[in-house]
Picture 1 (cartoon, rainbow over the protein chains, first blue to last red):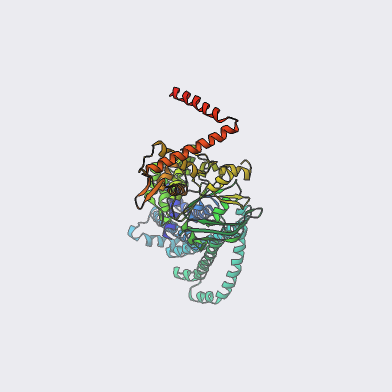
Picture 2: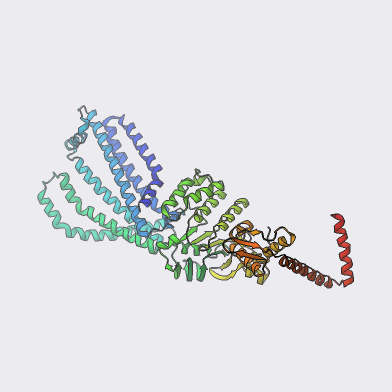
Length: 259
Length: 232
Length: 123
């Protein structure tokens, strides 16, 4: 398993390094434009990282399924389950790494904004400083941001596993259909539709839980912890979805694959 | 003891039947030639045994075990296509194999590649077609396992490199090993073959000891191939 | 060694070894390479070489010393006998061939004498 994950990263390290260097350069460039530049950077880099992550994760699996280089992986004596779990874990690690890097960029740029607005900043208290800025200006703190980012990551993982499952279904059961990409997309939409049916049911069941939370927190002023509680069910759904779909993909890879 | 048993193997695609009820028994200590023109099912057969394709019906027993991811460790398959990660250096490919396969003989591969002038720090994408073919063959034969499937090892390879590759194949003979070479360049390899299998349009046309064929038909295997398949 | 793929290879190897023994290239008691080495040398299948050795052992032209390898017979009689048999085969096919061409015994012998003289003159 470790070897599989290791090679996932070896195969992409050049690309990832290039992206990070580009983003760093962009940051330096936009810093020269003052606080506004910093904020612009945070928005732009988030979108860029988001898009890059999705494209990279999807491409890594698509290449293995559709290109001849996939033989390298699929000739190894690893079960389909191991292969897909390794891919998922690599995706999680990469995602967490990017979240962390983005978080650091937030801290750096946040500190820069504080400084550029004339306030002093104690670098050992940088986290608190940025927190105060955010709470003052926007009404939330880094805790909220972190919870949100985790929720986004959970969503992305669930999303990716849905894409992976669609691609696996197409490459195993429907391996002879032309326009595979289009077909994968259609299967992807179908899976999403099915999942939305399930999650609607789930949220109906969860209404008492939401009611109980509302009773506890003040309207319009939720702590980071409160936010975490609110998002917990949906994060759990994402995680369960990821696990179930990955298990199914593993089964298909093991029993039905036709490269 | 190495054994490969293929029983009534059929592989159907939407618009064609690649393998029809193929039944074959491969014994250890022999080098087999899987011969037939393009599209006769040779590659499909190998890919099923290597676990890359799933058969439509029939079974394959590798060392008396049903096909699964575990049997992949008994099979070393050399695809005819360019399947190596192109951004990797030659030595990185060797490391990959060492990490993924317990039976990979890393030093053996390293020394052999040096002997045949394949530069270890070249990227795969920068190798000539002859060097790529040599590399693929060396990697497949550097695994110390039971069954070797070499799919068209001489394809697109110049004459000198062919000799080198044939040499490496011949030296890989082992009493406990099954080596199966598929090709349509029969004259090049027939001296090295024990048994020849002719595959015609997905079915077994012939399964015979090469020397017996020569004795009976007073003809080379290539001559018989031309008779069976017409001029390829 | 070049091979003719139209005839069983093992027969060609057997012939070559016999020729080499009779011509003196291979001396009585010489050690033959192992089956594996010999198959590399000739570029042919291992089992073919194994068969060659086995057949020559049956003819008592080669013999195996357990654990040491395969050797050419040391028996001069064996070698002489081999030489005789090979020569006889040549003569028999010569006579049959010449008969087919319509030569009488007298003419065959005359022809041999003439051609032999020619060859010796060139040498």
